[in-house]
Length: 128
Image 1: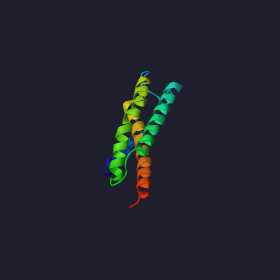
Image 2 (image 1 turned 45 degrees about the vertical axis):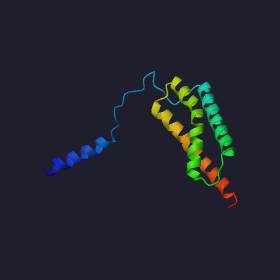
Image 3 (image 1 turned 90 degrees about the horizontal axis):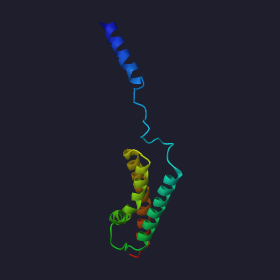
Image 4 (image 1 turned 180 degrees about the vertical axis):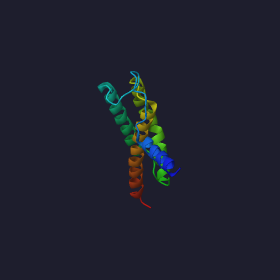
């Protein structure tokens, strides 16, 4: 009985390390090496427009008496449509939605950090 239990445990341990038999990528699935230069340029242009929008909005929003997180959220929501061309370009290249969403979430997170920092610096420079 003890030997059977040991053998079973050994099999379970080895089965964890066996590669899973995933189906191979089909021709209609996106692979990381398939993005065209036009798609990359479209994503870069949309990101640039997004940053320009955020810069413009930061300069024109009153910072007095407002919570920096609320101001940041407002700015990000105003400029959110500027990221839509990235989603469209990635859809044309058959990029998986999970990858597209992860990429856009990363862009938003990076922008949120930068905008929050800029808003906090701007508020700290205001006279009290």
